[in-house]
Length: 305
Ligand SMILES: Nc1ncnc2c1ncn2[C@@H]1O[C@H](COP(=O)(O)OP(=O)(O)O)[C@@H](O)[C@H]1O
Ligand SMILES: [Mg+2]
Picture (cartoon, protein in one colour):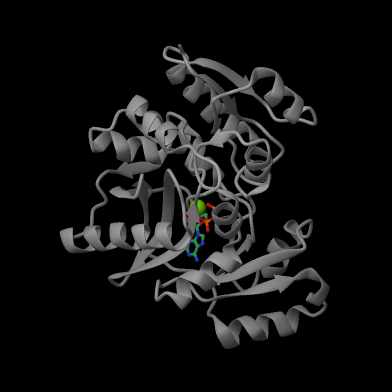
């Protein structure tokens, strides 16, 4: 008998649209072999789960509520197996402040940064002094727990104030050292290194448009154009981060590569699976088809982990 699968997609985060695309692609691939239902989680989520009684939930959500441990804890309490990382791993990974602390404690290089709260933003002069003391302009200002480059801004001394105003709907931000160089992202699937891709955006940086709109013409270089030794190294760091954060299924780690060093920016536990997404592209290069990729995630689905 065919297994029943609910694909959760949409949700409440700023990455809702991307999640809907991921969900559509996943549903298209799975519906041949399974009884599938694409579900946008709303207030009646638990009722819907109990009605359909899925064998597995495929989590195609991104960002808050879907990638941060909340949805995972609902599925745990409903005792339904789900794909991707569990509660603890998701909540640690989505928080850039906490995950960077874990990276640093375990000797994984990550750009210097400090947390900034708007309560303490009463004097731009002192903030600039603090930045100059601990970091160097330009810096990157970003929300602590968004994805898809939402809100991420590169600032110099003159546009810092404008950038902060744009982000004033967030309570807390991360102010991080800007690292020039290459953009490299490495994926882990089922505890195995599957490769690293290089992104060369035409835009100022790898922002939302550079990530998701074809017309932005971001160049994808697979495998990343770095030495064999460095290629092995970046994959190794991604595996170390994946294990440290106790990830399950798949993860994608985002790096900057500068002066022969890799700086880990963050690890994503719910990387995108749209046609422009990087994990399917990395997998494909390793002869892992999209169907095989999804099968691996379904096989790994569980609770209590
Ligand atoms: N410290 C940094 N130095 C240089 N570029 C950065 C830095 N932080 C972020 N970026 C750019 O912004 C993008 C998004 O930042 P990231 O930390 O990965 O957050 P998100 O969760 O939004 O993907 C990165 O892929 C990179 O292009
Ligand atoms: Mg990122």
